[in-house]
Length: 408
Figure: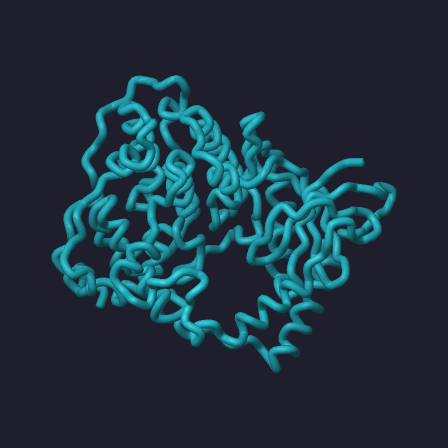
């Protein structure tokens, strides 16, 4: 009996599932890539879209939580993720959510695979809500036109986490030191913040969960839960009845998706309303907007001032910057902090030459100008350590703009 990883999508998220299925198939038509997870079968069962993938290690996030990766392991994963992104971008898609939680890693073999293509997109637009917060590049926070280069930024943040076990950017911690509204743990969130819809959503999700031993679609038997995400639960499952044939045609799955969305709209009493704040400010609410501001401050501290052209192109720029290009709520510039100094402090096991190497790698992937983010020099990804050029200046983005009034 073959073991697979079975992703059981939540009933309320059919669009994400059908998007993932379509993208995986489209990327597969572009050719095989050993660094992207392989979809074996997709089908519909009991109101859920189910996606059967080849099983491969566990999430990189779980691995890092046990202990950071070694230099050799980090370089290997970085090479494999660059190969995955190269293949994905060549097929016309940006992943939009690269992070350790969406990378599967087998520490025994060193193999890594990019997973969760449900958020991938071939059409990126200014103001889109993209990436997980800590891995979000400045152009997304500003509402500037995004490009597939957002994936390089997220990978750069991931490289830092592989080495240190910590986040390169953590706006929540910075906000907690400034605002009382952010100074709480998960157990003491103010009651008025726990909206009824959140409680209802959690109850609905709990009611949808299956149990180990359950048989899915008469073919797969659930063994062990591998993890829960925003859109579904992933199980290790055995193929106990391989002779069972399931209808996984895209036309059939699309029909189910339309039916599920109709049910969702009916339950909501009509079309789902647009979130005004998200459209106008790029945030869910005032608290979310404050986190975006703190995030931009951390980026400024690490890599220097944003390029004037990037600020000018941002739909949400006036929420963060004055016409002169100064932060509205900075309270003075933050003290500069280099990536190398952070690596030295948070990964003390790294020799100085490795600190230099990874500062170069992260700096290349996280260049402030999206057009200048690129593939990392192959020499930097070799092991053992090659001869490296001296570290460049902290920022190559230029000086702070004199005035941004030209764009309003």
